[in-house]
Image (cartoon, rainbow, N blue to C red; front, side, top):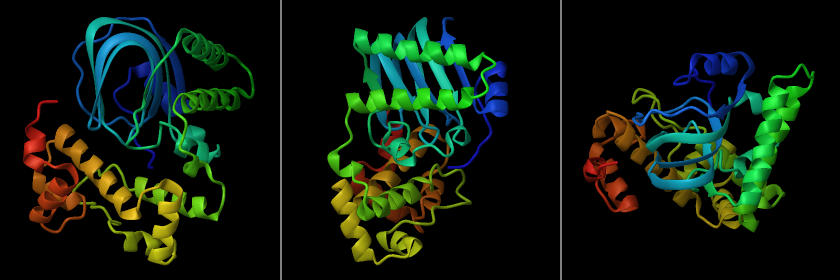
Length: 292
């Protein structure tokens, strides 16, 4: 994941992110009903109550309740508010801010795991607990405490743990052995290729053999470990992630289908069309024409 320019935030929040890598704020004001599809350059965890629809990658999430939402900068999303009222809290941070923390925890979390639902509806007790964490972050963020960054990171991890308790990670993904390390190296290498920013910089690793060579392991060994730990073959993970990126580009960019095909490593548009239809059941053009 790259350190990108912070965009699409109010000036005071942008300044804090650029200077400190972290910002927490309370949501009290009314919101703009219309918002545009684009990628963000920061991670965001929102605790809020409101009536809205979130288009997150290829997922459509309808909300009219209190919720916890995790936003990953690799996945473009749009929030369409159905009313102007929204209240709650949001913490926003860069990848660099969490450097050195438990990488496996972050990889298992809704912040990083592509293909999982990043939305959690909350009970009153869960809302009260998470609200107390955000209020703690607000108090610490504005304090002179020397170790406040460390405490803020602890708060983020506590929110992640609470979400993981609501939606436990499958047992196979929590193994701490050689198999899980190789599998997670593969998953991280796969994820670090995204998002595709330009057709001029196409996807480099597209096959299980490509990943095996990059990790300096035999392809059969890689396939066996990935299947053992995650329950899915290496090829399925690759196909699903490429399809997810293709859907995002079709819905949220003005790239031509040919540009998307090339950016995803397909030499010919026809190959991409056939691949996309095989994985999703729709052609790229028919998928793009769907109203989001």
